[in-house]
Image 1 (cartoon, rainbow, N blue to C red):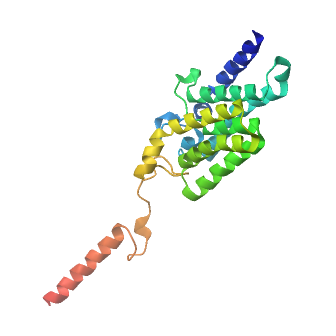
Image 2 (cartoon, rainbow, N blue to C red; image 1 turned 45 degrees about the vertical axis):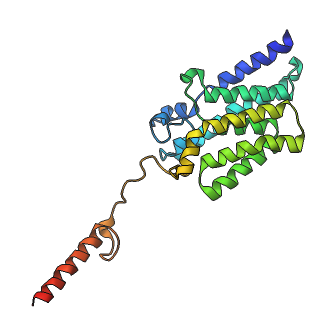
Image 3 (spheres, rainbow, N blue to C red; image 1 turned 60 degrees about the vertical axis):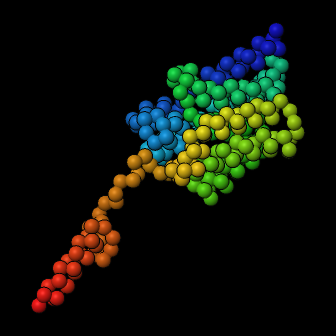
Length: 242
């Protein structure tokens, strides 16, 4: 009975911790708009960054990663006395990840789980987490698409675990997280294919026309340049008439 009870209790605790949507919590504390009301509508660090507040985005990223990292680490440190090993820790990490996707405290409307999954992987095995994060960084750096980087990293993570550390139940939990993460990026995949996906650092409503164009040289861009060209046309017409 205890063989099922302790993993179940640990999983429930992991899910509840994962259900804390820090994108919403941090935004409320800092007096920002609810991240579900702008940009992609996703309560995650990338969308919070579109508000223009880098500190809020960084805090969201940190706490979302910690809620995946901490429960797994606690099981690895103290779970042995309750018969909980590495596979149980991976299960608890999956539960925290599911909490982020479908948070009980926020009407089951959660984010995509990239930071939380990264925290889980880093706790399971720092080398696995590091390899996955490196994959994300490389793709993000060259493409400037956070969603594309997350999808590629999610696909590679279970293969890293299996090829380097061998097949185990942990691989199944990592693979399930990866599949769910890719599935949660379905809308982003369509936007990537259509060329309409937002890039890293792009603010919500950033298509506002640049200010101060009238201060540019008359031969530059903007309304002033077009007005100057019109002035030349009138002068040329006068010369022809003389």
